[in-house]
Length: 241
Ligand code: NAP
Image 1 (cartoon, rainbow, N blue to C red):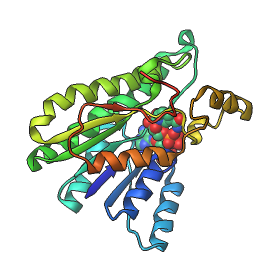
Image 2 (image 1 turned 120 degrees about the horizontal axis):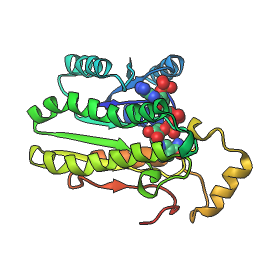
Image 3 (image 1 turned 60 degrees about the horizontal axis):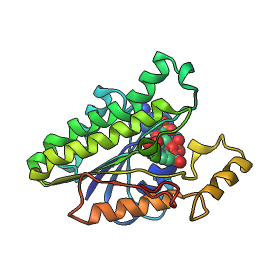
Image 4 (image 1 turned 90 degrees about the vertical axis):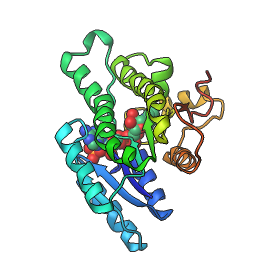
């Protein structure tokens, strides 16, 4: 399968890209700022005889998303799976969030998903087949204090997933969200050891998730054919709804 994944230079996206490449798929791994990391991943995979494309694009910009999708379609003919993983977070009291903070989080986390899906859909509709997976967050489900804009962006992704599933079902295109709990990546590097331990104690499975947990979920969603419009939340039981 031809699989385009955004934000694949680090963290969750990188793990997904590596696992899918090793499973034999054609993977196009998008990155924005972390060119070194993306190139290193590509080189490491090459050493093990796996080819992967890396493509620089800021997914918050329509023209860059369009060029990326055009590149993939020109090279591979079609996109079977689109994984919207790129995202940023910011901790701020609601009263301190500026217009620019708000717009930036919404643009990078949510509007980017609107762009990538709109640019990819004509190809999927033409092929009457496709799988779209959006990475949201538990905070879109239950709300996070001091991360209102982040939570809104992730809840927006889930609403987009549910609405679009109804439109796209007849075209045989599935779309689902994965809403992770806390996962061990750079996104959580500001937590102290003590804070992470406190969080662990709140989680019934008593552990912080690894990018691998999300990659396994992706693998399942790609390979099944009767799930659409759902929000699946690997979170160790931290949030149960
Ligand atoms: P991370 O380690 O900080 O990695 C973020 C990735 O997103 C990087 O590859 C980064 O690429 C990319 N990115 C950011 N802005 C971008 C842009 N404008 N255009 C293209 N790529 C962009 O974060 P992570 O933990 O792996 O997070 C991945 C996704 O999971 C995010 O959507 C996040 O909200 C979600 N999530 C994470 C957690 C968690 O606990 N870690 C929990 C719930 C949900 P560059 O560095 O190349 O710019």
